[in-house]
Image (cartoon, rainbow, N blue to C red):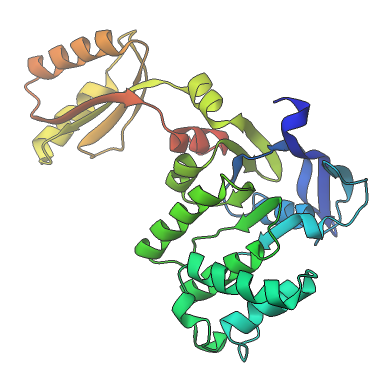
Amino acid sequence: MQNEAVLATVEGISRSFGGTQAVKDISFTLGEGRCTALLGPNGAGKTTTIRMLTGLLVPTAGHIRFRGLKPGADQRAYIGYLPQIPAFHGWMTGAEFLRYAAGLCGIPKREAASRSAELLERVGIGGAGKRRIGGYSGGMKQRLGLAQALIHKPQLLILDEPVSALDPIGRREVMELLGELKRETTILFSTHVLHDAEELCDDVVIMRSGRVAVSGALNDIREGNREPVLLLGVEDTREAREKLGEWLTGLSDACVVAVEHSPGSSSARLYVRNLDEARRYVLRQLNERRLPVTKLEIGYTTLEDLFMKAVGQA
């Protein structure tokens, strides 16, 4: 990534709480106009990292540098932030809250009113702007939080689990909105839903135990870690499951690198060296053993496979 395309640089930051080090010497960059997914299991340090980026926590060590800002300068005007569980004044209406947030950002009243109405429509709760927030559902509050994060047209939008409180329809609508927003601003979002990351992001940062396990452009990471696989399924009968297990236990052909199969399961995943050779070999073996095949698919490892490998669960 060229220096002129870098919006923010994280340089060896760490954060300790008492004797516990939650984040340990992590580094990565956020490219201007790109969408980055921050991934990792619970306790990996994602939220702590986000809070340091937003200025809510000060790193114990290391530096965060934003292009155009001097070291130590206040970055809040630069950033829009949606926490995982946004908090509101329940007695306010949605429109009042957005106008209030706009005022805190120094936006003039007339612009604040028009901007608030525009954003309420854009996040899908335009009809609820005059209702008190205390009566909003969790999904509506999440949408209002997104509108608040956008009110001052930030250069960097940081979202902590932005679709966690949404139903499937709401998730799809917000994902489409984020797809539009990535053409307008730089986005960093954390998520547990790897499909969302694959659909939306350009770059990924995968954390494990407070450290960065993998980071970079998603396409480059996928290409560099892509492995061919065969997905195999047989009839879900006791006889077929036992025959499949016996065959896989004794499998030793050079074209098969590794096998994933749970005892008693009717399906398996075979990591192979060459798809064509492996397919011919597997079909021949299945035919000789008269195994009733229900599925034989060829493909490549996914971001989920890489994630599981990176966090030490594969």
